[in-house]
Image 1 (cartoon, rainbow, N blue to C red):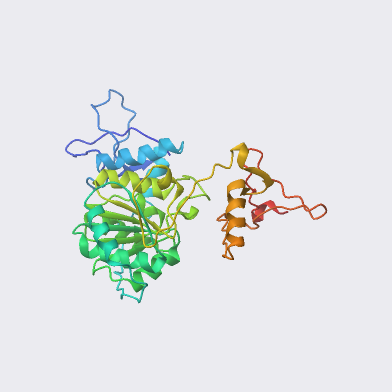
Image 2 (tube, one colour):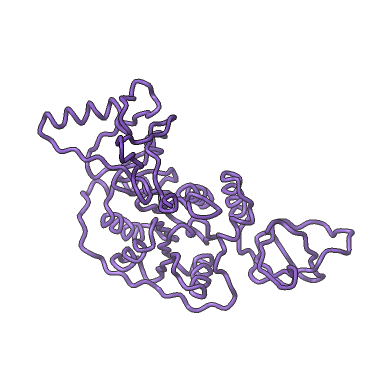
Length: 352
């Protein structure tokens, strides 16, 4: 799909962002109006059929999706298709969530004061939280803000768990990959019109049009599953959420057990329930290479120092794949990337 020209029949009012029905080949399809120009002099243009939903997307919303498309070298139409996936006229009433506040590890009082000060601004920031604490934060945000609240998880199981264990108000909905199509259409419309006040979603939530978002919470922000690796368009929901937050001028919160390296590099505000210290190590630096995969001189020194003090050391390698590494059965050599020293991930389809 791409951008096509159609003729607007006389008496029909069309504006940018409208959801319309147009003839395409031997059928009709839904489309979004991107621009409206003067009448063409050619007779080859086919007339559009009708306007389904006026102003389905705002102009800023369309610009946001086009910005994402340019960044990932995809067509704007592919982003639009992903954003409105599931939209149809025949839908059913959405199933509103009914959550109950589960027992969670409490947060100390100063965190709430810091959060209240931060959400009054629109700058993105990070906070160090476990999953249960993130659910507690979501419930607190729902009480603090008057407008819509968007919560994005990397996995659908997390959306269901959060919705069932967290009080998010009466008009709360869950959207994920296994949401039935007719129910998905009703959810998208309720979120677009503002009937839905809280949306707990996976990646698609970062692309949807909304009425007036008051805050966006990205849960488990360090997870690579926020990135769509499997099919086009291969967008990152976290980056899409940043553009969405700018459009609505609302705070964007990255929550997780650890801050993202991007936030550390950008010197963003980081709120922590503890007082951890972080150090970013450049794997390409020659002085860091010691001939071992993913083990740098700095890490080796830190591990040795901790072990000498009888402390425990936890090394986490957060990487997807069928196997974490490829190793020769004869000489036990582990091949690494010649540029960064990383160990290539082995996927199931690589093993034949």
